[in-house]
Image 1 (cartoon, rainbow, N blue to C red):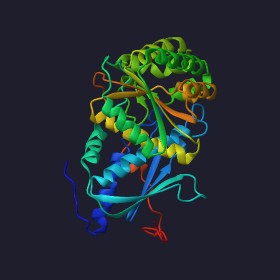
Image 2: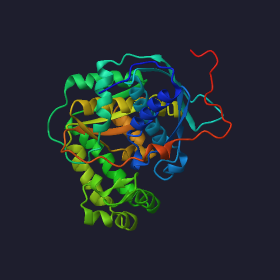
Image 3: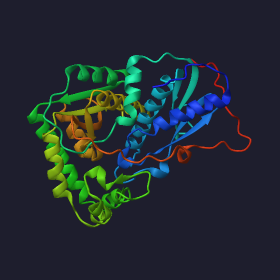
Image 4: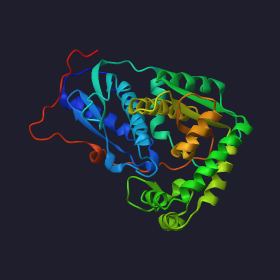
Length: 349
């Protein structure tokens, strides 16, 4: 990787570097691949905004998953800036009167990227959500230890289980969640809005191939999802995936607030990128977290005080294609006429 380690004051050059960092941030994961974020570049800083026009009111009525996705994008953003030799100062939820402004990232000087930062930055374009079955190979204990440290760094907790009996109990919750959601007509309609054919020009959402559908089957995916209750089939498939994975992991927080969700997204980003760097694959199985009653059952099952936010399965699967990403020009907030190029904060810490 080529990095530009100069601290040149040239404003145009810095803008280009920040633009490149935003491009890396767009590779973060998001529910249904909604990509619910916008960025604004202001002189020596980048602002991250929630794009609530892309929210999922049925499955995510509190915008919890939306905020977690933006937290992951924030971590991708800072990692890209660090690997471009830019030190960052991050302000989370800096303006109480503007809840859509989730973070402000300020260039605070030069930075020498560590080998670990470079490793995870290089993993950004390689990360995939892999819904295929995984091989029965154990997870490296050192990777699990590093994941625990990553979670703790962002004040999150992480429970990992390779016990087949515990995985079976979690699979029961996933099974019930699939059936409950698929029986909900509003849920099916919302999901169908984000599913499209393999040949669609859309740059968001989920093409059929991300679920293993060929070109012909992908053409009818939206109609099938919207029209029929497919819960039994999906429940059986997801049960098999959950029980057949080497490891299931639950990430959670002690509070259930936007600030905690952002922190969880940052920790999730590190977990996914570290796993990718070590040749591992992951996919989300958040059905028990998306239904309140099941969410608390999952917390009891994992014997944790707090709020489960993410449920992942981990292992090694066959290579899969990336899902599309919107071009940077579509997620940038342009400065309005007469707007200042940057706003200096008083007494930054």
